[in-house]
Length: 394
Ligand SMILES: *Cc1c(COP(=O)(O)O)cnc(C)c1O
Image 1 (cartoon, protein in one colour):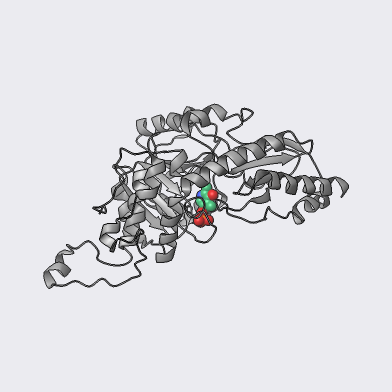
Image 2 (tube, helix red, strand yellow; image 1 turned 60 degrees about the horizontal axis):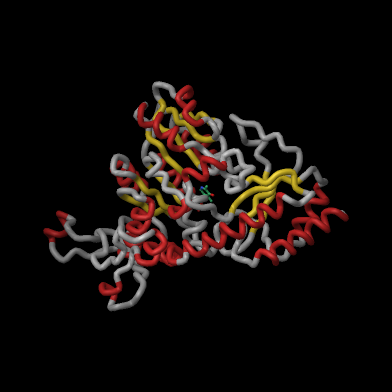
């Protein structure tokens, strides 16, 4: 259900599209933005309409003009056939997986996957009789060796959560297509502006819209976009599971979209500068940012992505817990907390050792994940430099 006055023809760039998709001022009395439609019940004017459901909106859970606007915008940006919205990024992941699996299936999931995705596979899918094998994110086309007769799908997330391994999506897609498997990609790090997994051969692209699309740390939201061959499965899952986000959250997704490109450009430039600055610090053992030539997946990033977002990791040389706390506890601009993708800068320690099963994490020092927000980079460097000084004297 496209907005008929939509000015976002496919002849313009994505940078312009994010400004125009999903809104039709002429249909809203000239107001620039699509309003927040709150609603459950939709009234039918006649018995015939009720029986045939031949009106654009039938029930609040299925669609409102607000949800349609965001779905349409994301579909266009991801280059897909259909999009569903969910109440969180994790709900987008779980809905997407449930759309394809059945009891007795086997699935292949990257070892670098977002940890709650892993928990969903281990704790819920396993109960439904779906077996998960985690694979080395760098496996590429060799994933063919892990495919069993009952393998249903491959799940990729590139770069990986926390550890930022780059996956060779086109190579994996070639195998998936040859073996008639579904290929699902969590595209949250890049957003639809910096990578389009569907164009690289995936069937499904997932966004934790909570992150860059909402962009202000003020709402939970998820999106799942399917190509034509996968869309029926996704629509059926949405109908069966009843997934739908709140009206305000949907609106905040639409609003975030308008500044997504300018925010990402700033996140990219600042994060690359901070990554290079950290790489030169004596306290740092290594920086893990796909946009740096030192990253083992740098060539894949250059080939498949049109930019980088603000999230990367750095490993410290071994320090005591007290010294680490001295660094983290008194930062003024960097907050410590989960999630990312908002305007604010964040840092959080992580340890992949307890949950990885297919790959080994061998770094000796503590690992930190940085989200570089929209702050001035000189201010951010000063904040971290003061932290390193505290760490040194702890
Ligand atoms: C945050 C995140 C999610 C989950 O999103 P929520 O909105 O927090 O549920 C899923 N995948 C990735 C890669 C994420 O970073």
